[in-house]
Length: 468
Image 1 (cartoon, rainbow, N blue to C red):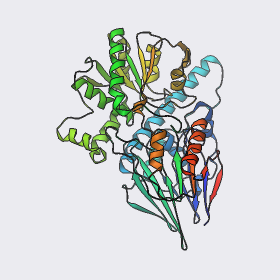
Image 2 (image 1 turned 120 degrees about the vertical axis):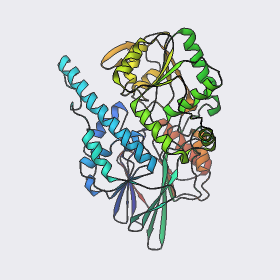
Image 3 (image 1 turned 180 degrees about the vertical axis):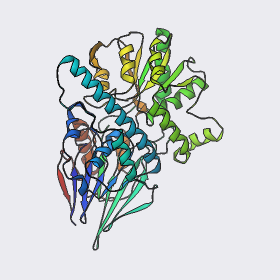
Image 4 (image 1 turned 135 degrees about the horizontal axis):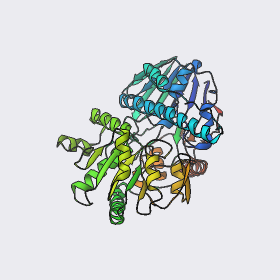
């Protein structure tokens, strides 16, 4: 069979997922993400490795920007085919891509003004990668597919979506290819979720596959137990209240913000923490929370029971939604202790940068990280102990308390990745390990070889592998 996979991102790094499948004369792109590591962002500005107009179909696993954030640029440069995702993912993508476009327009203008003042030029043009009009234009190509529904892509190729348990609407994609009497199944894991997390159901598993393209974000690490989250959160809050400082939570607007609200609701309802004000300072997170309310069918049994009892985990008396910029700025003058949840989750943009400016040099304040921090991001610098960081063009000493709760992660850890693979009963022709930093990718690949004896491949950026 004439099948190949061209790896256009997420190779020995954790963002920019783009995998081009060529089979039976068709070109199918699985995911279309942006790069978020500082040293890799130039890839997004480079010309796409193949003409976008030559791609037949785009399949999206979920709505995080490292999996879908490049879509408007791909469409602007000529891709005109359908863009398939689950219904919840399509709703959230519209929110996240518009937010991304707004941020890029704002950041480009901010950079232009700063460089003008400083009399210098940056490495990229002072224009956004794409704008709001580009994002809106791409929505016309969105099409939805339900989980387990078989999608006919033509020429003997079909795709099926399965619940990934990572974020609302996230999916794993099984692509089945027929050529004559031969059949091949390729599983694209997307981002694999965790078992026994709040809100969402557990990730799907598979009994057989010929090829598996799987993530390895935490391929050499394990998380804290999900059950420990509330104890750790309680400790952070108690300390901040005693210190009379704020708690700044850089958070992804999709899933993570809603999980933090879920646990804060639990702790407050049980009177386990002081009843501090919780400010959700993210218009995007507020919109995404509405999407959660539209899709209770995707929740786990416990969350559905809460909703049946008219007890929403996304609403409690001390929760304050912050929509306007003026309201956000007013949070700079908070007295006592408040929790401010704001994007972006890796501190690469958004309102959280302004809250960091006002709190990162205050010993009484706490910066609480509840998600993965990619290499080269501001968030990664902070969690790795930087004594000074650059925010919005200026340098600030890091004096705040820096805390991280690993149990919040929406990514399967090493043990959970192995658990997911253990459902495969046959011997795959190849397991291809992607979407992890170099050390994590290689460590996990070695572990799979040791545990299963399977053929494991780690592709390089822009490498094309032939699949027999």
